[in-house]
Image 1: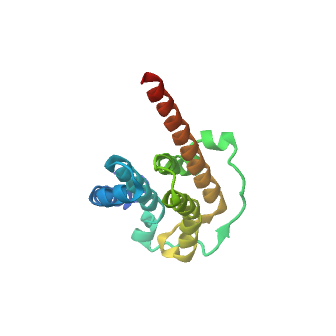
Image 2: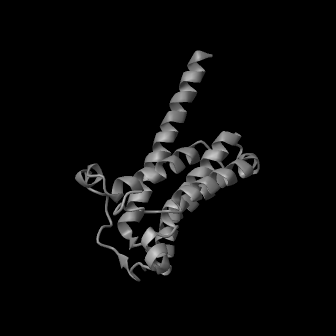
Image 3: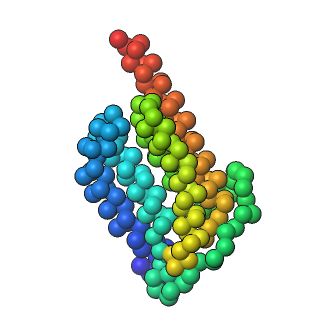
Length: 177
């Protein structure tokens, strides 16, 4: 790391590594419970773990200097991010991209009450993350309604894209038979 370079989230990569180990270890049980193959279960658990590592680990400033996040929530944006903002490389695009893999893997779970429960939990996840960020200022994170909107946008894109891809794959398979 160069002097002056922002180290950002020092616990992100270790968090993803832990999520990978947990996803491999738990994939058999989760796969059987959801009626999916182990690779889908790994992807589902890993995508959740990566989201948690990216959003609920402390920022570098919190660890190095004891910086604390604001004890309030920014509600200045409660609508979709403008395209220009997404293309500028700010947090909005990352917040959307972060939830797409979760949506795709959820779409691969066969329809059932368990899948419905997972979808409800995935919708609740951004709200829970922002609430935790608000309640734990020691993480040096900012609670923002825009993050919830962006996360839900990514989830919907993932669910929709995964569902369309699954439908197309099934149609190709039927046609080939």
